[in-house]
Amino acid sequence: MFNRTPIAPLEYTRKLWMRSWVGLTMLFLYAPLILLMIFSFNDSKRNVVWKGFTLKYYEKALNNDSLVEALVNSLTIAALATIVSLVIGALAAVALWRFRFPFKGLVEGTMSLPIIVPEICLGVAFLIFFAKVDWPTDLPWPLNLSAITIAHITFCFPFVAMVVRARLASFNKEEEEAAKDLGATEWQAFRDVLLPHIRPALVAGALLAFTLSLDDFVITFFTSGPDTITFPVKVYSMVRFSVTPEVNAASTILILLTVILTFIALKLQGVKGIAETH
Amino acid sequence: MSGALQDWKSQKKPFAAVVTAPVFWLALFFVAPMAIVWLYSFGQNAGPVDIEISGTLDNYKRATEWLYVSIFLKSFAVAALTTLLCLIIGFPVAMAITFAAPKWRPWLLLGIMLPFWTNLLIRTYALMALMGTNGYMNKGLAGLWEGASWLRTLVGMQPLEAWTPVQLLYNNFAVVLGLVYVHLPFMVLPLYSALDRLDKSLIEASLDLGAGHFKTFMQIVVPLAAPGIVAGVMITLIPALGAYLTPDLMGGTDSQMIANVIERQFKRANDWPFGAALSFLLIYAMFILIAFQSMRANKVKEV
Image 1 (spheres, chains in turn red, brown):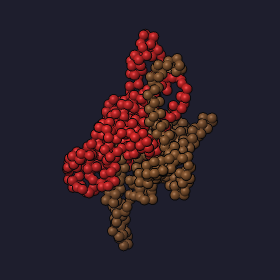
Image 2 (tube, rainbow over the protein chains, first blue to last red):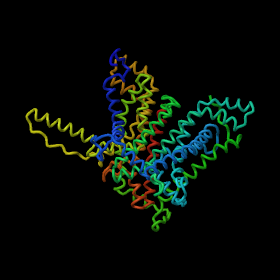
Image 3 (cartoon, each protein chain N blue to C red):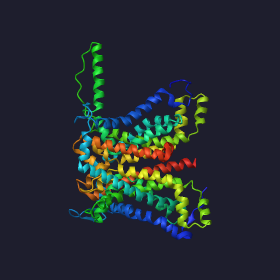
Image 4 (cartoon, each protein chain N blue to C red):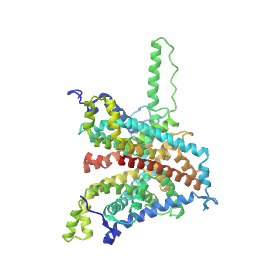
């Protein structure tokens, strides 16, 4: 592995200090997560000494109704927010890519704001907004999640629009014109020519929206009521008041979910495709 | 490649079909809420739940009190330090990824991106478990301490006193470490995409012409990667400045950042108008940062 051929000047990655630097950075990024996952199987209340393998904290976490409910809520919100963000984001991307219209700069600028405005400010804005319009809070599930879902769509769809618009840049408009010349209607041309072209961006955008929604704590913290707890909000209160090994178990489940989603994305797009979406 | 933009008037129906939903959503669920916050920032509490928008500037006046100015300055300092550390740690990593063998490159990138996709709260919590008084960081320090103590006995000195676990959490150090941990991938990715576009023959030429690696790095790589550095700095600095979770969970009583102060106005202190004013001051600060960046970008274009 080492030094079979002399190191060329630009093979920085083969230099020992560079390798150690990358190794240490990866250790810094992964050690906390891996330790957390390992100790979720530890048969001890205290986190540091290995006392033997157990699944009891998984059992406890899965029997903790409010924790499971929070996880179900989070996944539901993420799924709903992803679907709506995908539609609105794709439409916005097509509108900006295809048309010249008055106040286009204003629309474009405003759409990038939810990405730039600090989460705390957006959270506060939704808190005030939903209080001001008296948004009903006693709706049956899943409608009681509507406030959180709306907030999530607002910060997710600009990301989808960004990804889709980048993909649209490589679309050859002549293809669409050809379809129309051959008698396709506006809708048919959209469905059969444009949509297949942007499909990879839609997949990437959906994954991005789903992770962003699942990850969000701050904005949800301001929009959630006592009956609409999401997973991050629940974990927050558990961490805040008592660190229990159940949190380790629940976190491990969510980390594994992230890894699985990432690998599905890899299967669909290849490592390169994933790297290019960021 | 792509033809000219179509005028909306020539195709009113398709235009309406694509533009209505996004604009409607933005207006109702982004512009309207932000506008209400903006109006509230000129209001005052007129009862336990009522807020009267009286056009007063008192909230902004109160924000200029030293207490709040100092928290703003402190947030800037913490965010700037975080960004600097991310840049120092992240640059060699981005270089390593750029010059890695092609088959390794995507996996290294994935290695940086996977934590970035993992839940922020879980990552913060994992780091906290590591840094607690019983955590591994303390154990590592204890090991070093005992090693030092043993070395002292070797040279005939008194051994050190027994190790007492130090409180690594709940102070400013923990906040900066937590922010670096969370934001490092934000820095590495734009640096990588800038370095990847860099013409490698320029580095080779510099090395061939006798410049050392350090000189080449400072005079060739850094200037050429400048757009990526600026992008990385912005993409790290902006969220770090508005960070709420890390200072809240990992900070002590004196490490509150501006987002924590804003949160307090809405939850415990129940002073929504003042919280609204602070929110908008934070947004204005972001705008100033972005304006600086685009001014700089324009200058580069002119040259």
